[in-house]
Image (cartoon, rainbow, N blue to C red; front, side, top):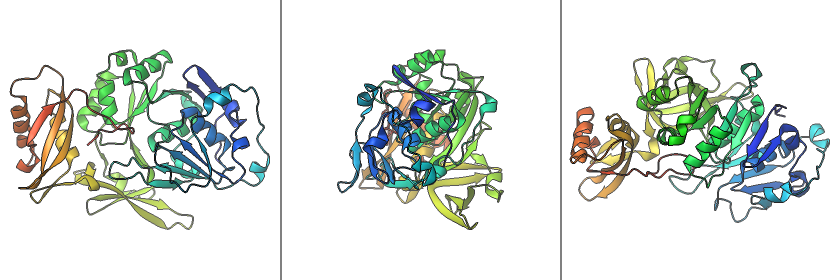
Length: 412
């Protein structure tokens, strides 16, 4: 059984919960879910996810963490939809059943992929595998983490379990709030540690409220962390430690990089003592998980990489590769080139069907100043000077309100 730290606490809106509240099943989940039963939490609040991790691990046979519309119609368990307000009206506590310590079940935690390339796919994990990369770090002092991700996503679960294991304070925001409202809460609660995608970080640095954030830990994940974004974060938060974490719903946490350089050291591929191990098969990064009998099970991450000197750099998702007249282009690579332009804050590149070449590239950019008259021409020339002609978008438009997905990633 995974042990959680007694010093953990959760702040969500006007409510706060101690570790003991949650361990004692404050929300009475065991009165709703029978021993060995199944439960699906539909778009739950962070407090319900945390309560489930502490009360249902070892008790339920299966806990599904579901976005709206993802649950199969034939699910044969209990379905809960944000019942926290009901439980908060009760002063009753239900003691933990001692049988869980004597005969704990192997609870399956079911999460769903983002669904960017089709219907969200269910992925089963054990809690042990979800917390494999965490450690109790009391020696470094208690931190106050902000939760900007949805609590049911892999990135959100990683922040939650890190706080549970390390004994940190977790400040959860409502997913319906604007980014400015979330940052304002983080400032009020003195959040000093925050995890977000590179896209979200670029938006955070453009938010006036972020000027009052005082961070000692910055974590990036979910997308390629390009050098311009890493440099901008170091300038904006000069006292923060910057970590780039590689993780996915399918393979879990792979590794973390702390040297503020894009990609990861080539030595990560050469270290046979790493768990998980890493290798490149063709252009695809693979993760090797050691099993109980010491055999390595290799799984594709679906991410394409290239080796440059002593560095392994990400190109983009294999599934996102765009065919332009027979040439393959990663939209993430074109976005990186566009973001290197002095006027560009962010960029998104998409494919548009073409009867002539199969596809053409179209781009939207967010800029830091008023639009110059010939910006599109400037940017197309900029891309052409940094890459082959088929990387050049056929059109480039200005969009200073770029849409971000529920997982904090840019929408293509």
